[in-house]
Length: 215
Image (cartoon, rainbow, N blue to C red):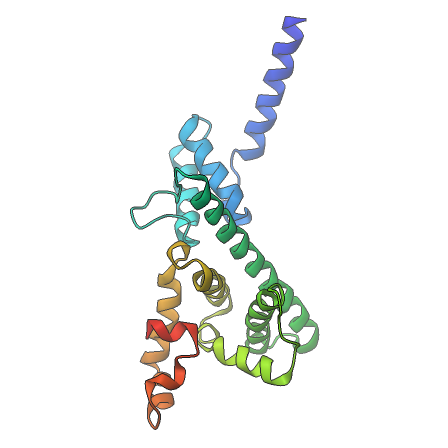
């Protein structure tokens, strides 16, 4: 009986090892990445190159704090906040991809329109998840389109990452990769868009936009 138990445990260990060995970090959710990283620290199942790939993907998604360490807290409340931010990021990513697929059916290979629709869908889905969300209207869509302008100036993949961080930043500023948002806004400045908007108006005219705080 003991020998049988040992064999079963060995098989289970091998299955777990095979499931995580050589995985592609970019295909994992944020929670799975956190788990993989912890496993890489606690065991010898991951080589240096695999761990480096995991860390690189975590940095890309803003899952590291400013000190380049995973964002873990000792108390339960901050930890729950971290999980909430992770779920919010994943939800935003899913909403973007949903919008992209819908747009592809309508506009085909026009990536510009698809990207814009996907960005707006990401913001809209978050708004609809909140209590007392307004009804969808042309005015609401136009407002959301305007809010996504910084991210619409990026290529789709970059824009998708940036809008996800933006949605997290609006609710959990300390847990978002602000550099992705800032880069998008800086690009607008370089292209003269901000100057054009503010030429005949005061800066306060953009204060209703959350990202205006980063100008």
